[in-house]
Image (cartoon, rainbow, N blue to C red; front, side, top):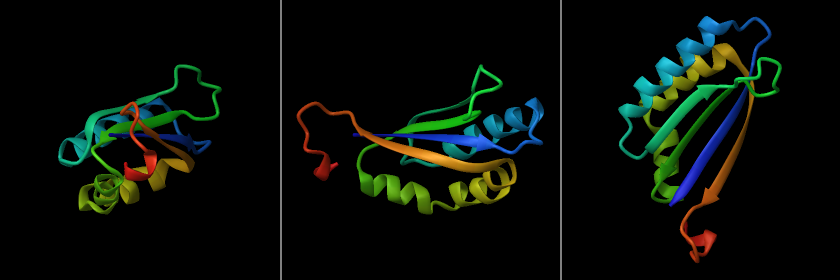
Length: 105
């Protein structure tokens, strides 16, 4: 099992309403993608933090994560929401099964 976390820097002009829209749009998008499990999204409670928005989800394997990235719903979310409100992202992948070799994730 692979846990995916993405942290996003938002543009200087982003307001609370933009972050709310991002949360709603991400949840709508991710509910349509069968490869993503235990999806979460939200905004940082510290308004001065470097990363104001995050996404996270579990995937059965790296191949399922790759399928997720190619899913038309995610591509649309990226182009219509993320590119409009964010300036950059940092992504992390973690293996969550104890004793499993990460190269087989």
